[in-house]
Amino acid sequence: MAPSISPLFDLTGRTALVTGGAKGLGLAMARGLAEHGAPIVLADIDDETGRAAAEELAAATGVAVSYRHLDVTDQAMVEKVVAEIDDEVGGIEILLNNAGRTIHHPLEDGDGEKWHAVMRLNLDGVYHVLSAVGRRMLERGRGSIINTGSMSGIIANVPQTQASYNASKAAVHNLTRSAALEWAERGVRVNAIAPGYMRTELTRGFYEAGGPQIDQWNLMTPMGRPGEPEELAGAAVYLAADASSFVTGSILSIDGGYTAA
Image (cartoon, rainbow, N blue to C red):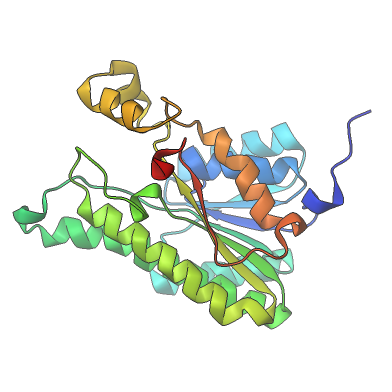
């Protein structure tokens, strides 16, 4: 007999919308939620990968998993798709607001397009989904929102030049705190997870190749290694579940000790 899930972590029937959920950190956290009973809606712009991920996750966990195309930088699309999903599932109860990107470019290059491309996705996109989903959660008086921040919102990374990414994630952290304070007495909790260096599909090749930059990243991480996407799943489950019912406005660092050093 399979062990039962503690009521503190039981997410059965609580539908979760996961943006940037086709792969990487979003999919790993979605898997953790699904394993604790939450039906999942994966949302992304990578339709082929997203549909395949939804099918695999449903087969692996036995919960309902669907996929929706969503460009979080398009506010009109966000409002439309969120309204449709919310009606279809009878209310989104968990939001993993995860879509994001980084572009390395030095500040002095004056490349406003790169700067704004990062901000449009990492900050504006988070705001669009937070507002659209949060409004509906407030109407029902319940819900948990988990934004994906970064240790880069707490420290400035070296040696790479990513000021736009760092600034966007710092803004996500303060947006998280602001929403948490506005909604604390209205039943909606808002927190953020701040990952450190993670070995994802995008970075796996860099870690396998190694080199001075990887050596520097590992040296500056007290645990001496990158995190695996699956190591974020427990935090996502905790923040989504009743186990964290008195937690809002928190930024949970999962970085191998990087920001503690």
